[in-house]
Length: 86
Image 1: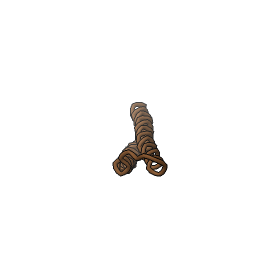
Image 2: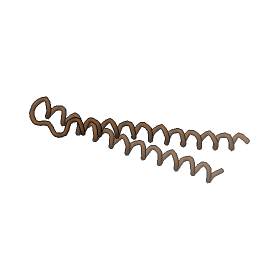
Image 3: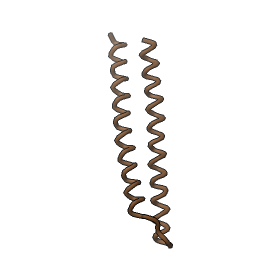
Image 4: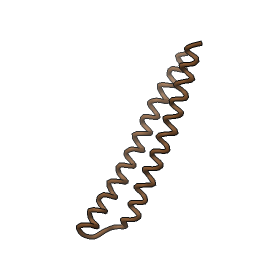
């Protein structure tokens, strides 16, 4: 049981770290997009459409990865709880 508990704790910690990393990437993508919008409104614009598409893509990937990781973690937690009830 201790190995299963460690495995679950490790998986939860790893999933939190990965989710945080995706959140950071999405935030940085939106940061660049917002900077480009401001530059477009008040002056020169870099590739605004490209940055916007990039930010959307990164956000969608981050959300999908978060959902997959969370489901895997919840499944492992449910399996461990079922084993403990036996």
